[in-house]
Image 1 (cartoon, rainbow, N blue to C red):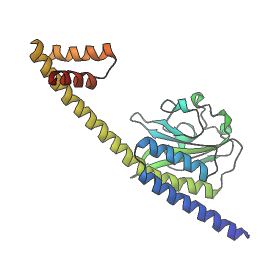
Image 2 (cartoon, rainbow, N blue to C red):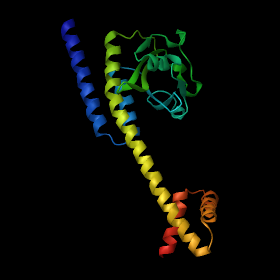
Image 3 (cartoon, helix red, strand yellow):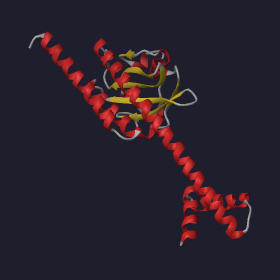
Length: 234
């Protein structure tokens, strides 16, 4: 096989994987499923030992949300300021950053909770949707690795595909959370009305009773409200 044939085969494989990632992301349901799928398939196509996704929170921190190689317990806890570390720097400047031996790079920041000392190289790319940075994705290997231009371009393409889908998933999660909060409020209001009528107490006392019961039973306000409403219907 000539070098041209080999290059064509590699490109074909990468394009096939990009199509696979796009289809799989579209079929995935929850945000967690999408994140897990992206990290798993990205690690495979780039032949990396780890792939991680950090999403930007309201305080300008990149929070680890999914990983295939870092410590699972670090998910939701490991965080970088925007511009901090190689991954944070990639997110801040809006361009990929590669380091064959990351810990030797002056921009590197070690996060103890991730237990990432097993990895040497790092390639990070920003997640940008509608001209807004929403996070970053990185891949790491256990051995020193000089990432090629093809590697960098491929991760950037994956990041572009992922960013749009992740932004939609984040919006759906936010809408779902608001809907849940509204439904809970309606149930609590209904339960307060029942307690006010049953015990001839005011609204403040009724709310305090629901709150106290939730704490004592280690249940949510919604669960307590639903129990009060159900008992009234029996």
